[in-house]
Image (cartoon, rainbow, N blue to C red; front, side, top):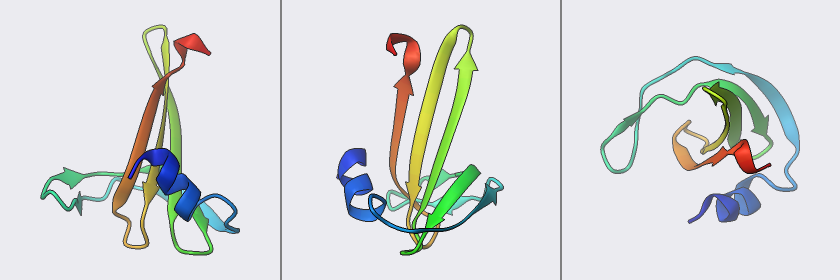
Length: 85
């Protein structure tokens, strides 16, 4: 499933019930790899979280969004180079 499809299914139209900051916690992905999702998040009424972050590498602005399921496992991620915006 693409990031856009995941967003439409689990995030769009949901009610925000909280927010906070998640420290990097090791999470085992379905393929056996480890991920360490962290950052400021918004939590929705279905238990899913959305983490959005931005950074600059040199003169390139980067934006990243991660959707976490109710167990805190990343299920979708999208990154964009904002030079074209």
